[in-house]
Image (cartoon, rainbow, N blue to C red):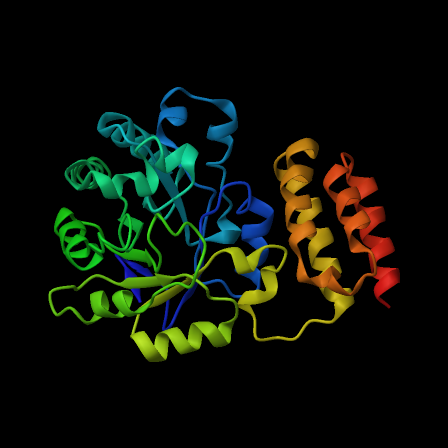
Length: 315
């Protein structure tokens, strides 16, 4: 699969952009374990334009994680164009437009999946961003606002006509949020449309590489994107079977990278979410107390000590 000149090889599996999840340490580990492409946390266009420090920091990328995309969201045309220009200066391999985030603070304000209620503006933003930057521009969206408005087959053509070079489709509507099952049939329909010539990437309910294989085989997509199943599990992109000790070593490395690359406070904040969600610790009796301790830890050494205790309990 190619996005512009970016060659991701056959049947690529990508890491989805997720706020407070896809920090630099996590991205680097996912890339090491085989992710074909990774994305930063999605960033607010308006915050970038206002030069909000915490948002600008999210643009920090490393050559070790390439190819890497930066995803932006917003509802104002001018802000999205200006943000795209700012992002281009950060040097990612592509810019992705977020038309799929369903959470209230984004979609409820008309951005993200909220754009599914204002297709003319979505298309205007897409066209103007494509015209404003030299990097490949891609988009991510959902099947529609709700099951009465399943517009993705038409929308995919419209977005393609605006000049995007790949489209990721999450197999749910905005009204579903993350509930129920992802419907891949419409994703497959988009891919089979003879008028579609850009890569189609499917997303939703992919929990393993076996799931990804089934999606490739059944729906013919060009790529598969994994989101929530990656939490605390960067090795999900590898067919290698890691030992328990190796998995804990990886999580400790993620903590160290984030503290070094971000700062101790935010590095811990990001990493402890992964630790609390990681399937590694499911065998610990009364893990709830340990999970609370992880989520309260404020020092790197304290969090490392908790991880070492977990290691001993699981042996």
